[in-house]
Length: 445
Image 1 (tube, rainbow, N blue to C red):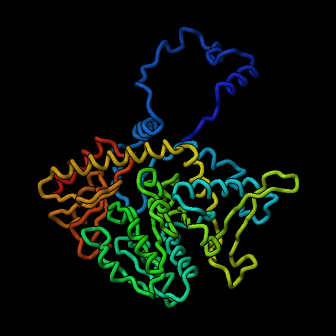
Image 2: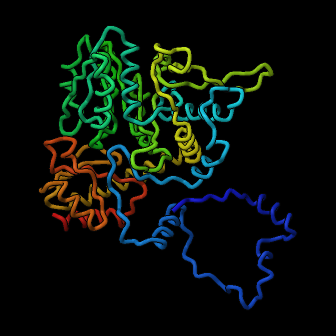
Image 3: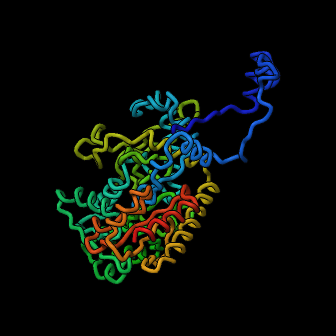
């Protein structure tokens, strides 16, 4: 069901009524005989936007055909306010092309500038570019940034609890360039700090970590940043942007470069995209960033003007010296994120995070009541693993037949974890749905 948004204020309504010559909305129905008018409406208590849309969806479709979603692994079923679609679908945004002519593209450039500002604040970093394709390619570009910034080193150390899809993309990017990748196997689903210390040598250019990691474990890498910097390398973090309303930001951990998947910030789940790649960094690495960066200046009349400050792409004068051949900046996706962050604000993001965290803890507590299920003990924000007494894929098949997608079986990503399930919770999951998850797993075992 498509969300719709009516932006009329009280003043707008008064002006429209004045144009048609009536003083109140009720007067529009004067032509209906009193005996035919409804005397009252049997309405429930007011609902939130999300609750109303959910109820309407249930009324307009077959409830038995709807699957309750507990899958995540980097892409999440978050609520998107109707205002996001309403604003982004405006023709002046929707039809705008890439801003090669700044004098004719001030609106697009300002939107991207504001996007960069919001993302930099959220990540606690100095600079952001005007977006990339998705979280995986953003992380690969971050690794390439590190190689450009730290000369004469050819190795990147990656924690194996970084999203497997992201690690595969990084490997594909680096394969033809002759760089070496060293993977650190996790310990109890978290970074093995001792193994990392042993892996750091003079050939290491950067260390790549994820927070929360693919298993949902949340960590503080401030100590790792100090360790990495003492070895002359850079710390590259991949983060879940929405979680930064609660967790320590990359900037607070002293990361050098931070990337992420912006899907959680106003992008709908859509069979793999289009999504939004976010990349941020300390200011000293700005000239190694791919894509483009929008800046603000002043024109001859001292008015604000927005320009492409840095545009190191092959279409421009850089040619073979380009830092990336990315040919789209995912402008509409970046705009969606800007609108979402502007609507939610600091308090709104914190409230969503608190809701997600509380529901995640409730889910862990309830699943812990199942005698044959072991719930991960580590700190988690929205995701966690559970160990099952049976094959997770077989259990998933049984559960989905009952309309519950209970999580992601990890055997396909980690061969030794065929009985491990990754469960994801978002603000959209109700207490009743979480209870249904527990019941479905209990009955399937």
